[in-house]
Image (tube, rainbow, N blue to C red; front, top):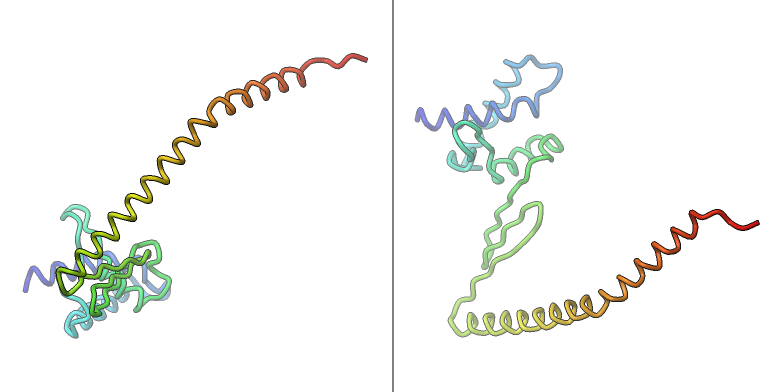
Length: 162
C-alpha cells in the first residue's frame, strides 16, 4: 500500500504544475489532482504500475497514464506522448502515431504473411538498387553543373566592359 501511495504521489507531483488552475493555491490544486488520480485508480481506469516509469531520480509518466490525464484535462498535456490501447480481435495500439499488430490464428496464414513480407522486401530492395544506380549516373552531371555554377558566379563578380 505504501508503494502504491508513493507512485500516486509521484504522479500527482508531475501533474500539478501542468493542470493547476491559476485561482487555486498549490495545496488546493494538489488535493484536487490527488483525488482525481486516486478515484480513477480505484475505478480501474489504470493500474498503479502503469502510472509512472523512468528512473527513481527522473520519473516519467507512461503513455497510458498521459492518455487518461489528457481526457481529464484536455490540451494541458499535449507535449507528452500518449498511448491508447484498444482490445480488438487483433492487437491495436494507438499513439500519437497509429500502428497495428495482428496475429493470425493459424500457421498457414502466418506463412502467407511471411511470403508477402519477403516479396515486399525484394521489391523494395530492387527499388533501392535502381535509386542507387540513378545516383551513380547523376554524379558526373552534378560535378559538371557545380563547375558551371562556379564559373558563372566568377563571371558575375567581374566588372563588365562598357
